[in-house]
Length: 192
Image 1: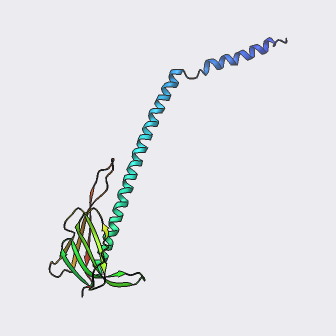
Image 2 (image 1 turned 90 degrees about the horizontal axis):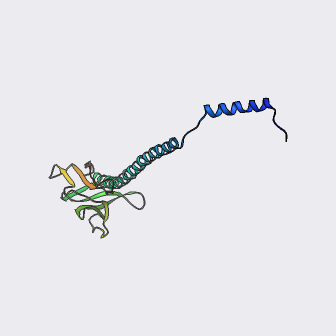
Image 3 (image 1 turned 60 degrees about the vertical axis):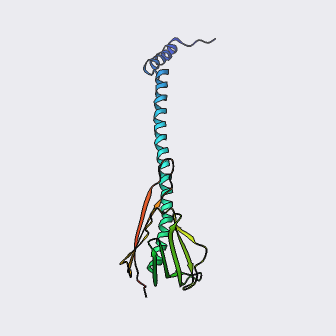
């Protein structure tokens, strides 16, 4: 066997010994503590992320539900605004002759009734002017919580109708049901 010269052996021992003293590394306890602290930080980040996600989903559900209610309210107020004759039976039912967009895309004068008196829903019925209303009532605004929806001003021959609908939103485990009030006012401009 060939032996390593003495001078080379001395040279190789020096750097190895120096590296061992200067760069010791981590002990097992230090590694375990670092791992535990990293897990705690990661779980906190995940918890906050999950809470943010749940809040976003709840907000999106609320926004979607209110958007549907708002669209129904806009249709109701648009048709009241276009009415040529208007009869308020009470604060929950309005009967009118109004312009609606027909199947051809043109505005047609039709008889329309909004009835918000039963089952927490405002329903819309349509028929020919002076004729019977259709039996198929369409729900326009759902989960209505207030009894007085239509408020004419002045009472006898109104020129303005205030419309207010309190709607209940769907609740989840994270967000309870809320009641939101949608309000609008209609200046009657086509009265004959």
